[in-house]
Image 1 (spheres, rainbow, N blue to C red):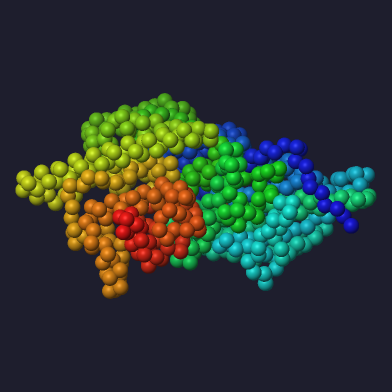
Image 2: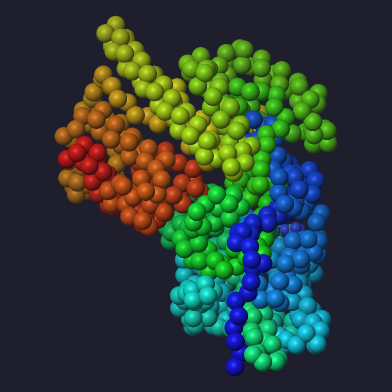
Length: 624
Ligand code: ADP
Ligand code: MG
């Protein structure tokens, strides 16, 4: 009878970092209908740069453990990122390799590849067999290799080697090993034996087409290779090493892929796993978290004993160079980056709040790469000129805003873009402080607007033009074509990075001097669709409050939805742990709720629930 032994982790309790590699796939003409050229490029074996969405004359430089450029072969990716960790599996240690990134960026190519260009999975399996074969008989161990293949789809664990299986449970044994009771585990004796089981099982994967990629998958495919070694002599010690090879679901923003209804719901669940994975990787790599949130999703729970701890983990973030992937590339890089830095800074103030003039980087820029190339200087001059004309929106913006706060915001954003993990706490304090200041400014602004409105009414002026709020939106879309600058509704890639949307001012008006009854409310402010009596009755409760008071409460709720912690979200009426996490997940993916009604986009939040949520929270905010 073999005796299982725990594997020592070198006496060190230090949690392993997840090594992060980024792989940029080649530029594909057919992916870029408009022929706009790449928006991201490699700099060297660890660094890359992407055009800054704030200002297309700047780039943001990212640093990773490894950067694999367009020319990198499948073999090179394997040799540098995967092969070095495989010997550990034979010594009873665990490892995981996962491919992250938006659909179409090359995850499946990296993990699976094709018969001409085999990827990480076939190469790793072959290598494990080779390593076992090369083991010296005299060492006195027998090795056995087995495989399982499963997917996590819609937060359900499904066995790909046995079609009849249902959602499988994930358990932890007393030695903290993660197990899936009921999961098929097949012993394999050679690579061709592996292929025989793996190929048909791959076809079992749940896939559905999306606008982005016909073959895209919204499930996480997880191949487990287990190596068990047993000592021939007494007491027949036994050690198990696990290798997880994971092709993750696409990390794209699902608003752009046309996923709706049931599929949007699936996306929500997938995003919960990806969202949690990002938290886990983040806390492992920053080393600051007290608790790594493995248990918050199926994916991270499953990978718990093979990601971080004494395990060897590699994340290959796949990105695509075309502009249509810009937003997803930007968020994938922000998830994966060790550090980032804005380079080429011709402007300071223009980088906030301005719908920036599109600048398609010319070939000269790409080749020169510096900040002072002639075409760039020319552009800077032109843009400065526009500013001085007063015709640019930024001129309007600056004249109305308080420069000291704006300067702080700009500085803060620069800090956020380049900060290291250890700076986060102090940075968050700065964010809170800035938010407070913006809020105060906003209040002043509202007061001012109300007074102006009163004055204009008193003066008998009739104005049909609607007043534009000063802090409309801090996010500037990355516009690529000059002609688009005057047509903001034609934006192709509206970028809403999370950090920036968090800086959105919170409109809480304490002292509103103009109160209007609900009858005068704009149609767009109304919560319920006009689909029957029930809704009108449901909403009658709102009539008893003045619009300004109601609006204040709505803004407060919106504020919690947009910036509240898990605990604060749970403090809302009718929001439990699960819903709060889904809201956090939604926020992570989509940035922020522009209006309360956006809440129905969160999984499980029907119109009816939303209506009841609003009622409960507004009444609670008013102490009723
Ligand atoms: P994902 O799995 O992330 O959705 P795929 O692996 O299916 O993306 O890649 C999308 C397309 O790009 C496929 O046609 C694939 O063959 C191709 N591709 C991806 N990465 C590379 C690469 N490094 N070299 C060549 N072609 C690639
Ligand atoms: Mg794929």
